[in-house]
Length: 196
Image (tube, rainbow, N blue to C red; front, top):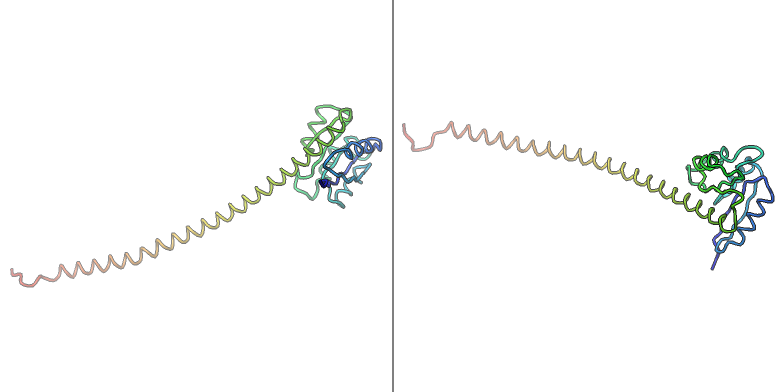
């Protein structure tokens, strides 16, 4: 069975952590991850712009920016929510997790709980969620397009109905006028053989 190829960008300033992530993901059956690495936010943004990245592992604390602020730059040029991002932090606070999720991260992991099982699962979940978001956006666009078509068709039908109603009134008016003339003419003429 051929493995699914995915390009994974790891943005983390800790080389040891990046090595651990590579090791965990190389063991994951069914997938062949190609790794791109950046130790700063700026390098990470450059790599996202230059490559087709399937998922980003993003550390919270980077030397040049925090990971939460970096998400917007990473998604630049893409519809919001379509870049799978797995946020990673050594500080497992609810406020950091909530901030990451509100900013567009699809998954959040705490360093001490990352394992060869949790990391691949988080990446696959993030990719699935982002792809579903993309499909939803495509379907919403299709619905909007169909609605515009229906509105246009409705306007054409209204114009057609107005024209038909007008065109039907004209012959009926003529027929009514002709009947009025016949009636008037019939009233003016006396029937033959009638005497007064």
